[in-house]
Image 1 (spheres, helix red, strand yellow):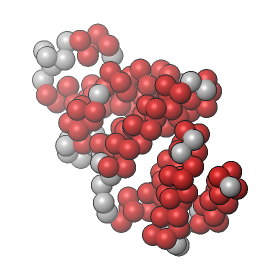
Image 2 (image 1 turned 180 degrees about the vertical axis):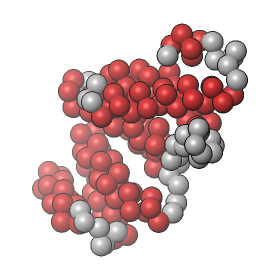
Image 3 (image 1 turned 135 degrees about the horizontal axis):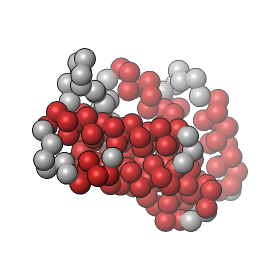
Length: 169
């Protein structure tokens, strides 16, 4: 893959799209397999600009389609967060924070994504707890309870809010 990536200027645009999609799928599979550092390496090389290019790719028999640019940020953030939980290095936590912010700010607004937003905000709240920003995590949890009052995770959010509130007081 890396040898093909180095020669990407010589590839036609269709083959370049397939190569980029292959890199994205490789990083995603590494993330799912728990090889977070390897996935981070590919995602950092992959870059967000290529994610934007992939998101413009049309669905078809020979072409692949990626949901949105925020997916690249989100998978990258999850990899950094899991790597932080393994190593306790705050460098990974800061990178996860930046990627979660980018994922949420680039989030596509439609009904399907509206249903996916509460779990992502819960992950972001947990990240803020690790970061030590307890008032910010309570604010996120309160906003989730206010806006997404019918979410499945409502009682879990109440539980997290109580834990953070006890920690603050």
